[in-house]
Image 1 (tube, rainbow, N blue to C red):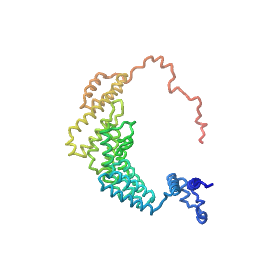
Image 2: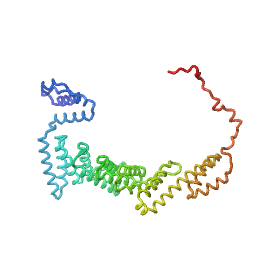
Image 3: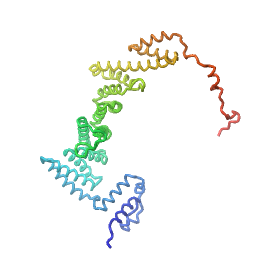
Image 4: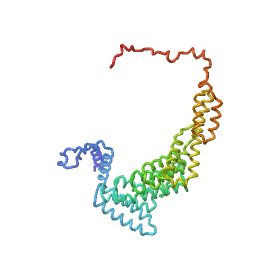
Amino acid sequence: MRMHPLPEIVLLIAVTLCGCASPLASSRDSGLASSSSESSSLFDPEQLTAQMKNTAKTAVGKGTNPDKAREMYAEAERQYRAGVEADDRRSDLVAAAKGFRAAADRWPDSALEQDALFLAGEAYFFADYYPKANESYELLLKKFPHTKYMDVVESRRFAIADYWLKLNDVQSQAFWEFNFFDNRRPMRDTFGHAVRVFDRIRIDDPTGRLADDATLAAGNAHFTAGRYLEADNFYTDLRKTFPSSDHQFRAHLLGVKAKLLSYQGSDYSGIPLDEAEKLIKQIRRQFPRESQEEKDFLTRAYAEVRFNKAQREWNMARYYDRRGESGAARFYYAVVANDYAETPFSRQAADRLAELGDAPAVPPQRLAWLVDMFPKEEDLRPLMANSETNTTLR
């Protein structure tokens, strides 16, 4: 009976996992000791996965083969030229993209792989297969972080993300919707994929010419979607990470708007108000010409900030006033009257301060006889206490 070749393939994969020499290798190779780098690969999951893939591909005749890679690359290049010149070019370009990806797979970590991955992305891009194009571009950046195609790749990805955002504005997807027919958009969550690409552009090429543009675009996308906290995070990152960007003034101005819109009221944190007030003062100091053009907005924004901050102090004063804790109430009323004189709460606070006069700081204790029946805190003693003289340092 003829033996099935499967056990040999399984043996090859098992040998790769163990980091041992293959029993199919020559006796000369089997006598060599494993190097330290080989032994360390036992604990590298990515390297183990790569070894398993290479072993499996070799077993089925698809392992590393530079000559075959060149042949496949040349054929894909011919299809790419034909697709660019044809009227109905989509089929040729898709076939070329698949050929480039296959050629890259046959000669990993080579200059040919870098060129093939880039051209695969280009072929998919011009065939309007944008998710596939972005996938090839990201694989290129992962394998070759300093690729010579960086500027072109990032401009393509920026265009793809911008297109996805515009497409989402026209045809938004619900969270449960899936796309199985349109090759131009992701399977689902078009908005999330667009913002992710913008975020990756600034991470993959932080000193590139599109890094600050991508940061601003991601912030604007969140702002338009009503996600003001996320938008504010991107605007803040733009102000801090790209100080020489042409978008600095817009990042400051939109940061103020995002902070004001993210404020949820006096029952929640007042940090957005403090940061917005600081940012408005910074805009007037750092951008005197631009701030004059936005004078009306900045004036209204500052008045809104001051009103909301005064309201927070007024609410605290009223809270203690209702509890009869006149001392704390007087403190907050004084803050409102003195620090927020331009707000309508100032006059009310001053009037209430006059009404309180010399009222006791805290209300008198009711049912004092009942309270005295319970032990006071200073009367409580631990059940077991060590004497100071018997304390032993350990």
